[in-house]
Structures are given as C-alpha cells and as structure tokens.
Length: 212
Image 1 (cartoon, one colour):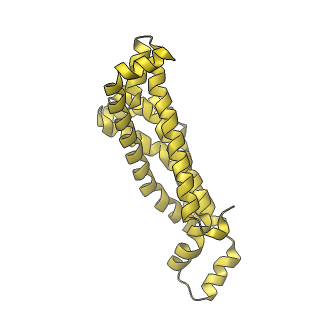
Image 2 (cartoon, one colour; image 1 turned 30 degrees about the vertical axis):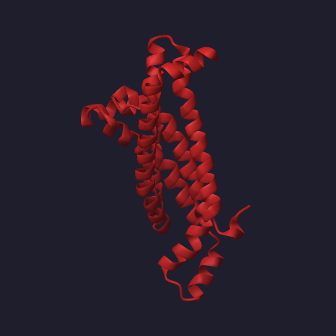
Image 3 (spheres, helix red, strand yellow; image 1 turned 135 degrees about the vertical axis):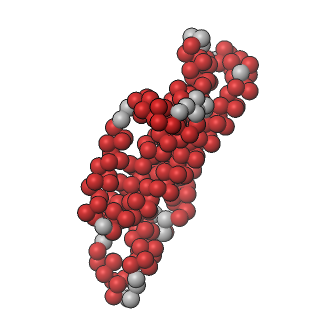
C-alpha cells in the first residue's frame, strides 16, 4: 500500500492528465453513441422490418475483438484519439440500440391504443407514452454502454489515443505493479461512478408510477 501511494504521489501529473483524457474520450464517445443509437432504436421500433439487420450489424461489430478493431481502423484513419473515438462509439451502439428497441416494442399496446383514441399523434404517443414507459430499459442500455466504453478506452493507448491505458502500459513495460494499479483502479472507480450517476438520473427522469 505504501508503494502504491508513493507511486501515485510521484506520478501524479501523468495520472491526472491521463485520467482527464480518459474522461473526455469516454464521455465524448458515449455522447456520440447515444446520439446515433437512440434514434436508430426508435426508428427500428417503428419500422420493425429494419430491426433484425440493424441490430445484427451492431452485434457483429460488438463481437470484433477490441485490439483487432483498433488495428483495422489505423490504416484507414491513422493513429490518434479520432481512431480510438470511432472504435468506442462502435462498441457503445449495441446495448443502446437493442434496449431502446426492446423497451419501445414492449409497451402495452392497449395503452397506445388508448392514446390514439384520445386523438394523440404518433409523435405524441412516442413522447408521452412509449418513451417514458421504455425509459428504464433504455437507461439500462446506456449504463451498460458506459461501463463498456470506460473499460475499453484503456486500449486507446495502443493507437495513440491517450487515457489511463498509457499509465497501465507504462506500468507493464517497467514491471511496476503499483503503476498498473494506479491506472486500473481509477478506471474501475470511474465506471462505477458513471453507473451510479446514470442510475440516479434514471430515477429522476422516470415517471413516478414506473419507479420500483
């Protein structure tokens, strides 16, 4: 423990800079992933014949090993944070698309028909009935994508993307287990923090009658 604390103290500049890079890269990838996956999930829920190919493609992309995907993107885009960002966005898509689609199609049809009977348009039904009802499942997908993104972002170091992977890699190269832990522990804590924060947001935005 003393060695671990001494390592954090002596390498504080490296760790802090890498941690800030990691947060920025993870948050940006997640934001872009949500901006793409949430509308995609809504579209395939509305036009269900597109659901199988869209979810299938995102599932196939999810199965590609992380390092292989990074390696595939380097010749196309080059090294740097842009390559890491694209890979992280790709990995964030599946849980959000799938959970959005599943949540929306699981809404009780009788409630939707009641809304139509009251004269609601499709957009009003989506906004006032379908989306609020599906929100817990959608947020579960976002939380899964968040934890996945934060963890995989450590591999950004292999394409020059920075982040806590730099700290971990330096520790591995120098056989310094304390430095490896100094890189790994903050990543784990960051994933937990994001998950707890998103759970809190989920409870705040979910209609009271749907909160368990």
